[in-house]
Image (tube, helix red, strand yellow):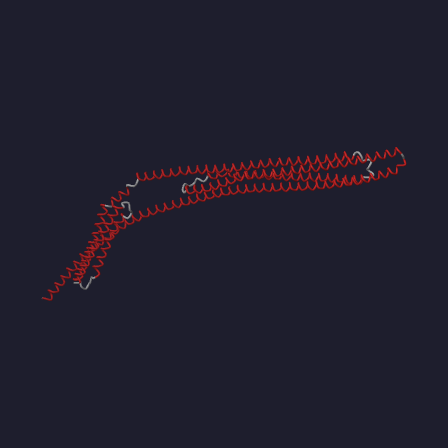
Length: 534
């Protein structure tokens, strides 16, 4: 019963091994039909041979598992059934491997070998066409980027031209204002000095010698007032010179601003040269163009804001110039009115004094010619007249000093207002130019940031390209290693086949020796039985 069970188990394992080898063959055929270019197809014969060898050793192991050297008669059948499993599984494995090698493996090799010249040329041609198309797209994209940057540079130049035009107009306005102030100062100084000198000369020349001894102090005060007026004129000229120097400093600041704008334009002209060097890679241009469009929209908005701000600046400058002109005209009118009023009052007072003096001298001459007895009354009358003249001159001099002080204070206030206004104008101009310089610096910084980002993107693309090349090299190495492994597998199959054939020969010799040994044992048993019987 044990022998029947062992042999049945061996036959069952034989059927299972044949089914497993048949399934492997079917899987190889299915793989050849579905994926004829797969690298797994070349390994099917080796797997079939290895499966046959595996089941061969399994059969030998099962045969030797229940082998009992002490019970050779019962153990030989078990060993033979295991060897039957071993031989048949090895036969089926090698047969399936040979069939697969003869029928399906050549088709697989033919399929692999058919991909050489034509298809490779077609693939390379298509890749060349795609690369040329990408190169043309990249060149077009570079041209578009160059055009966009040229337009950006033109816009920056236009902004610089508008700024320079505004600066030139501001310079013209400042020069006109300076000339008007110079003319106003010269006219005011000349008219004031001339009118005061003429009025004093015309009023004092008639009675200067006769009244010098009695009214010398009053005339000394008048001379001091005139000297103070001359000192005020000198101070006024100094203030006008200071204002002129301030305007010259403002013009110099405007010139420096123009020079800085020229430097900015030179730096912006270097942007296309920098962009011409950024033609290394051709990937991810669409995203970069979108980013560039967004940035150019920001530039256009900034340009619109700058263009909209220029009329406001011009209007403010015009309003400021109008206010300065009005203040200067008002100052001139007030000065002229004050000077005319003072001169008219001086003339009136001088005429009154001259009339009184003439009347007094006429009275004195009449009294001297009529009688010498009336000298005392005439002297008293002259003293009274001199007192009246003295009081009149004192009043006129006090009024003159008050008028001159009021005129001086008003002129100082007007000059202070003009100085404050001009300082505010200069401050506003400096602030506006500083804002323009800051905006230009921001635009230049943003352009440099875009260039840096482009360079960084190009470096990233180069790194990606190098990584892709490295991956390609790795894939080629993997393919070469797979070919090397396939060659090794082929050599191992040959070695295993030789080993299997050697094992078969060893098994055959073992069976032959075992059969001879069994015959000798039977012969010995027969001879022993015959000896016992005899």
